[in-house]
Length: 481
View 1 (cartoon, helix red, strand yellow):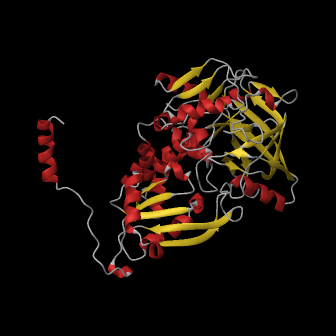
View 2: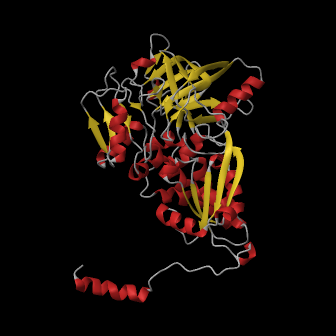
View 3: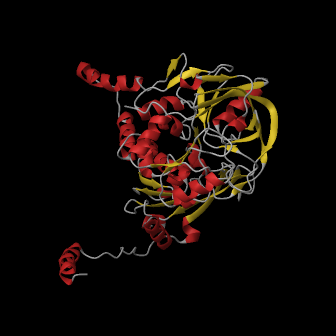
């Protein structure tokens, strides 16, 4: 059975020894960050702060901060199980004959079960506050010393495409300016920003937005997924959890939100209103700089009677976001292979903070194949932000960064095998020459062929013969080493 809400996930974490309850008073200003940072870097558990200073609302952190916790969140023994389900769906073909159609019915029924279901209310509406509320009633984190203030760091931000009416759910940090106002840090490439631009083009004055905090773990995770623009994240959340997400209509805006959320902030963004936001200690491990972003005005708060506030921190890797990104990498590999079947595996090491480094192994079939793969990846969704792509042969284990680096550094002639390109760059990249625009590097670290102009012999990797290894296995035991 799918988790109903955040509480059931917390109970599962505790049952599996993956949760620590912190009962001493801890300040959301800096102290909780230090707790969470130490815990994730030491392989520690998720943290439930039961007595945050300045608030009666408990804080959950590091809920996704290990591969095991990601597997618990998605209710699988291995992330590859989710990838296998996606592969199975991708292999669906138009059935032939009555028997083929009958065999297809269970799959079609499963697809139909993913779609969200609208309900009339839900736990998120146990308390409705149109007046007399303050964002400072919640234990919102001030994460790092140079941050511009307190930031909501794990929000599910819901908006609608004004042309199609389709819903989008993204995760954009929100700096709290005062009791009822925050920033809305949707970067220019994100769908929230696209909805904003389309409304401006229509001459509209405001944009309805709702922000959900908490919910079942698959729904929270879906907000960070690099899905196609017109694919509803709540449909994919239904696929991940094997049951539809219950959605409830907001009280004051034309938006639906997960009915099982802990806290909901309803309001609007006034088009054309910008405010300085930041700095913020970001997932790159550096502070992202101040910049102008839209302003979110909170007009209504709905919540459970005893809400739990979910939060995350980002900073020098590895952090919680690395494990979420690793899950994205594993889950979406089948979709990448669908478009580029020559790909064998992909890895984004923690030190590359997602957009700085991608290691790719391919089955090389023709001259220049590695370069074709580089350019194809730069044309795929959020992979367009990848600053450096290193392509190796299929026998290289890209999950082993040491092996990949050893092979790549030995295999390249820098002038011949490195190319540069220009294009969109992640907004958080502080080294690019301009915001959102800069250069990228592709490295062809595959073995070079005569058809690529390489006339010298290519040496084999040094490996001991299996027979000798087997003999020494026995001798090793006899030697008592």
